[in-house]
Image: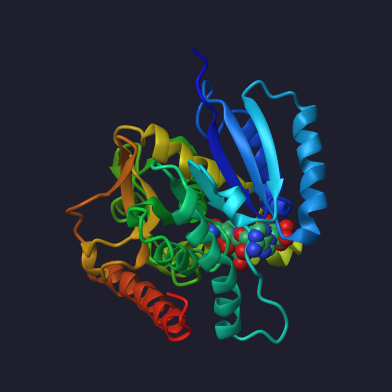
Length: 329
Ligand code: NAD
Ligand code: LMR
């Protein structure tokens, strides 16, 4: 019997990440080459027409795995029966907007989307939040979905993870495939901490192979943490294809497992590991086993790392307080 399609909902489908993402999902790169998908595109009313244009192009690709496309501006319809929810659409910061305004505007998006997921999602739903501020948007959505296990809500730090691998490989003139066990800790923001102390390059400890703390402190960490801003400065728009690529990597590994001998980075609700307050959606080193993320335990955290993890986590605590005060969680 033919397999039932997996329902994948993409919000902000007419945006630039959406355009880079949808074709890869439909071609089988998200879930695997034997898994049919049904796409559900959620947009705001003004952008539904543009989403229809993208859907026409998807049709024109004649992807064998694409079982259908639905387009709507109603979150309840978009998330009804959803198995994989990619929350990409968000309210960007515009001129004159304060941080509180940005959080409030996003609360107006991610609260109702969380409720719609709670009301109609499939039992196995997995949620990835890409739209910024991703960690706190994920927290808002999760807090509006009390019937869905909290660990199904994640935020994306895979792009930061991939950026860190690439920077380290360049420094050591090694292929990216030789870099394993990279870690991003904390928030998807400039305070994030890319950690090479447990990373390996061709089986050798990466920090030892680099042997240059000044490079790690003054080059590597700021380059990775500020890469998003550097791309906006160069392109005049935020990263899109690389963000879509990271979303594909994230869900692919979640569903299919992380490779043996490696781990990845995901922002997920803390269980208190590594001193991160419980419930905060913070990035950790994780493996995926049997379709579930598990935080890698037992890593020794040196003083250099401790200070940086604590700083990023403190920012997340502040964001959580801010949305709490606004009544968004
Ligand atoms: P974009 O402006 O091109 O597209 C966003 C789309 O979202 C628009 O089409 C808009 O109409 C839609 N949208 C807005 N509100 C919506 C709602 N309530 N429901 C459904 N759709 C809605 O932006 P983009 O370049 O695609 O980026 C999307 C988000 O991803 C931004 O917040 C960006 O900062 C973030 N981002 C995150 C990462 C990461 O690593 N986590 C990386 C890159 C970009
Ligand atoms: C990125 O890391 O590329 C984005 O999160 C940057 C942004 O602000 O959209």
